[in-house]
Image (cartoon, rainbow, N blue to C red):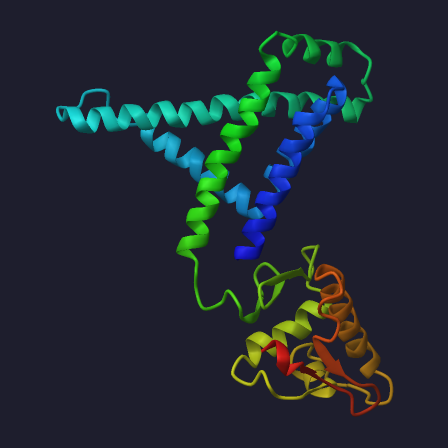
Length: 269
């Protein structure tokens, strides 16, 4: 989790830095578009934005009349902070929405872009957008740091498979296995090892048993069907190698043939 959070913060800062040094108006809007798109796609940030929204709704829903002055001031202060965040986030969201329209309709030099440019052409616009990045980053970073502190658990340096999200974690490294709704052969193979046999991770797993128990392949042919599972192992190793920038290229140990089997490399357990 720490590595995921750190990478997320680095990506957000890269967008911020790019915006601060860019001088071309259109390209600046492109950076804002990519930044907001990243926030909307990154799962951990999406969750944070939803929590901020929920918190804001609860705060604004507080009754106006409060007999406790201290509580009143506390609630009012929270309302101001919450509204401030959404005000600055909205500046970026407006640009994101317009740029999405421009991208889809290819209106780069048409009235849509002129309207957007006019909207953010005031003398203070650059400072306002820079501050928008700072406010949004600050609130999200604060919550990411809290999540990192709260989730400092025993899994941080463990190797495990999140079946629901189809993500393989290897000593803090994150490897996405499924990118589509349908479970791939690689997903099923990891599920069999990490979920079905969670208490036997050091075992060898024969392709024939995986075929029968996980894939319900009752007519497994040892002379040819091993290739399907051998390929799934290759895919997993390629993904781990790519996503860890070649640091892990031997996560699974497996062989070929009618007695084919696979095991986890014990140095990652």
